[in-house]
Image 1: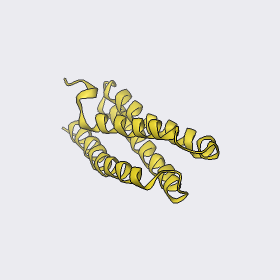
Image 2 (image 1 turned 60 degrees about the vertical axis):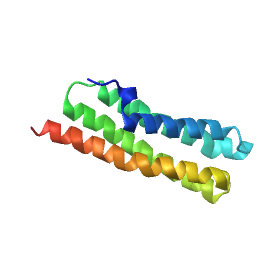
Image 3 (image 1 turned 90 degrees about the vertical axis):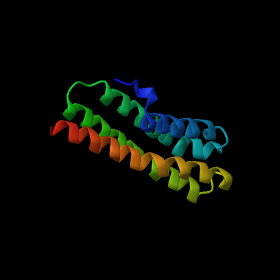
Image 4 (image 1 turned 90 degrees about the horizontal axis):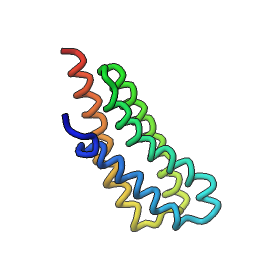
Length: 121
């Protein structure tokens, strides 16, 4: 079995959370106290739930945590949309976020589907 950190879906989730973490220090205090801490938690939760699910035994448990990860992914996107709309995230950084999000979403869905197919065998 591969290690979780070797998987693209996990690597992208970590990349997104690191990008959020590093960008946070550039934000004004008001944005850090409101959007900032929320988006850090939700972004970190994506990879954490993927890892927790990966460590579970049954497919049903795995899928449940991967769905939590997808929920955290959607929450992260919502916070990032707010930050972009409110000009908290610099325009040049917006494309970096969009690229990772554009890759992570489909990979996360495929990861859930592949686990679900394994459960139905």
